[in-house]
Image (cartoon, rainbow over all chains, first blue to last red; front, side, top):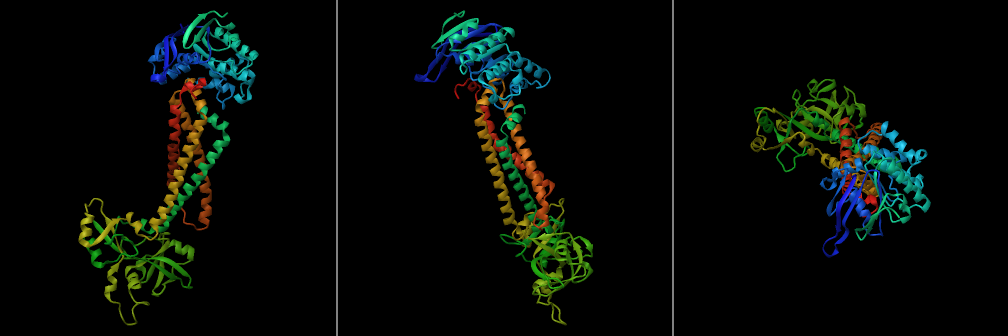
Length: 228
Length: 378
């Protein structure tokens, strides 16, 4: 099991103002499996994603990524796990404005202490080609369309062969057609790279390509199963 | 440097302006440093080259070279202290005229010929060459075209001196020094105008006064300076401390140092503000890079390299510009001296101050949470 989140609860605030964001949530994702987390706004989808990615600590419960319990790790160890085992695809793509498409990928190699020439460069160009962005490698985010930025974001997330891909609302800024393309690309990459993928979305029309759908309401899992 | 360099290229305009500010500050800091060294040289270079460790003055609350007065008994007592070499010095500022009647403003120094206070001549002879011998600073020779063999007359007292030698370009209180035998200095300062009346001699009493005593204290001899001061009735300080006793020195150096301090303080504030704002603008980007796996060490190193690049590059340009204008200062005969130590010291001070200012921005980097990459909690 690449990702195993067990009995995850998240409480925010103190005293009477305390709110339960997640309540005993369990989620398991295997290598090459794509799971969609759906639910209305405020259901706790992104909080669950943040906890699974080591961006936030749960109030209780445990998360293991590739057998490593994230709860046992310090902040710097969490950072190391994120750069070595987890790839993120963010809402609005979230690219570094000063970097070209190629540099966005090479940044991941640089964070891992690898050189940015030779093998890393070849790998980055191959991934850009996989997402159809080989001709846009030298463009900066401001010179790319929304769909192109999201493709670069996917290629960046796959750089360094992560075991887990966490995707946050990848279609929220795209029209229906572009959004569909991006989700299909994600599914294709998930299966091709055998990477466990968790995608948060509120768009029911995008989940037909995933293997499993987990529905969250008010911080609880209310249903789980194949997409309908 | 991966992010730092690309960020700088991406925001060339902002970093260019910042570098321009640092360049101007560096230019001014180095020029002011040159001015300080020039002022020091013009105020106290004659004291700097004097092979003394301490100077003894008349005991007062604020001893200075102009107003101190000591008698013969005093310097003889100091000369009798084991491990101490002592010689009197007469100091006054005087107006003089060369043989053509052109005015020459001088620091008029009387020293005992053959003593360790006698200046080393670079041309001509020493003070023992004639009773009315004068050894002049090279600055007088160059600026006033005075040559060996010329006559210099002290205004009002009309004592005449024959230039027998030239020493290095030394000065005190911005006046080039003219050295004469102590007896002639005493005669010019305490005797009647024009010297002794024909056929008469001056009373010996006027030859018993000087303004200060140069002391060369053996570092291995344990001399209790305070005890000897109490016993002899003097106030002794190190040669370097005595620089404050030359007129104008403290005020001038303090003024320029204050300007230099405020420039560096400005640099600290400007760089601190710039990099703080820059970090605030990059908050989302820093959160993103942290989410991708960068730890605080990586981001702090990256930001530091950015600060260092700006500082080193801009300071380098500022220093080169300062060197470029040095010749202009020198050509105009300004009080200015640029030394390697001064330039390196000023540059390092500026770079250190800039890094200190940027530390405030670095604190902010550490506090940014990676979760903001998800677009929440911004």
